[in-house]
Amino acid sequence: MSKVNTVLGAIPTEELGVVAIHEHIGYGMPGSELDTKWWKTPERQYEETVPKLRQFHEYGGGTFVDATGICNGRDVDYYKSLSAKTGVHIVACTGFVGGDTALAHFARASVEYLTRQFVHEITVGIGDTGARAGIIKVGVSRGGRMTDLDKRIYRAAARAALATGVPIMTHLAIDAENAIAIFAEEGLPLDRVLFGHVDDGVNFDKTRDTWIAEQGGRIGFDTFGYETELEDPPFWARPRKERLDHFLRFIGQHLDKALASADANCSPLGWPGVKGHTVNYIFEDLFPDLRAAGVDEATITKLFVDNPAEFLSIRN
Ligand SMILES: [Zn+2]
Image (tube, rainbow, N blue to C red; front, top):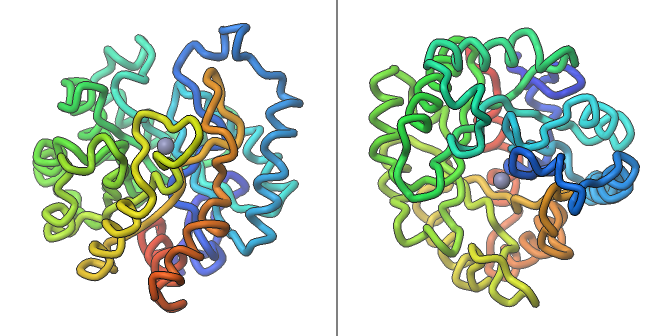
């Protein structure tokens, strides 16, 4: 029986249910916790987060994958209490959102050091929480090209994925040639990698989603809801219909490789966040949009239950 590490322990893959594959309990750049302008009390974070997770559970949401890497406000004891209180399975990650979010201590680390860190968080636990990471986060730093540190992190992630069987998710799928070369050198099958953010408004035209899928990679349309139609859209917003059409075109060709999510923050750290955007966009907006476009229930189940279950399962 295959399993997935959640913050409350490993569970059988069949229990994941509907999965939000790329979300955040809270996300902030390293150091934001020291900024009094943005600092939030634990009570306020809890108050902002619990209703969203409860609503997610009520809609039929099963599992929330937190894509917040080391140094970005990841707080696993807090996640454990949120999961216990709301009944939502929470999968925490090891790894870094990108090299430019790694603090100096890690920024100078070798591939071997980073590999040990990731493997420890997956097999022993994160800090002293006893909770094991269920996925490894990596990413491309700002600038659009992988830095040397990004490459060390990708290589360490590949080694940790091979050693432990957990998958990898990426922040951005630009410069994928370099990423795929590293995974190939390390012998990691590309179906263990979810290349994320292929749908965002800044990078979609530089992202070779079909090419990556043809080589076996999984593709994340995971910024649903960041729309130019919002009152105060973020710089990575995109017209709602344009994103949906892109997704529909992709699943018409590569349904097996597609995953989707909203990349929302339950309680943003160190920035105002995008007002009103939550993980529940999946149920409140995306599912209705898909149905209106003629997508059937079996396809929705494939995208939000079967594909994530196959991807998240620890592979021995
Ligand atoms: Zn994210």
